[in-house]
Length: 378
Image (cartoon, rainbow, N blue to C red; front, side, top):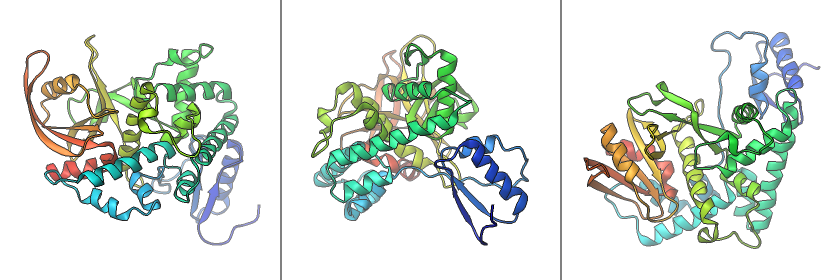
């Protein structure tokens, strides 16, 4: 191998196997230890895990790249004025019916295209929905082809079955037995761990929510799984797309709940993270037999904040009321399709317990602003 020129090296592992990745990393470490190296790709986590040589503390740092966020989607569509309106909204101020309607229209489109750059670029350039769907399908096929690179770790067919199981269970606790009947529990668990390691999926563990940090007491057996990008779900479902995408109300009701939560989780993960640290999401569910679940829980500004997601403009909040009483929390967020507002809740739970808290009602398209709004209210 020839010595590279001085400066940073951009190393992409596409079309290479994990041993090839490892061999090149070893070469750089041994022959040119003073040269900074940038490595990226779906196999990077596997290569680093197999790396034989220990590295001094401070020699390796990590950076995480998320799909394009909804604000970036608006910028790609040259909607800077609308984005400014959304960025400037604070509780107590009206947003305006026209701005809300326009934001919902663009967000519904975002839920169809997702945030993968090539798909967003095609959509912004005026491509038909069928072309965007073809690009999403190509991405999924690329990931499936990458599964072959995990040979020795997992059979590609099992990884494919588990990935489809993730999509079918969006918004729900992941149940291994609901994956293809030919996949055993341990196989499904191992495959899911590999998909999460490759950053194609994101694990959302159950947290007890009795104090911060939330990660201090979790139960990873009761986890939800979100996809890297909502557009990949449509490719796996083969959601129809011709000259235009289907309207939100035309999507099957059984899928809308999962899509709504995937979109919110995707925005929150990016908003809660930093360039060198991924955003961490949690969820909560009652474990004593009584039904009760909180879709998402975040830790922000030292506060535990539950986030309930509704696919429409209405929906019961019995579990949220009881959760707020049991955990003695002052603020909750509800995501739906209504304009944003802030209200004081004074209500009784189904068990008759009185509870008071502030409820920040946000439309789905403002999920990326949750950390800033929590800080504002604090």
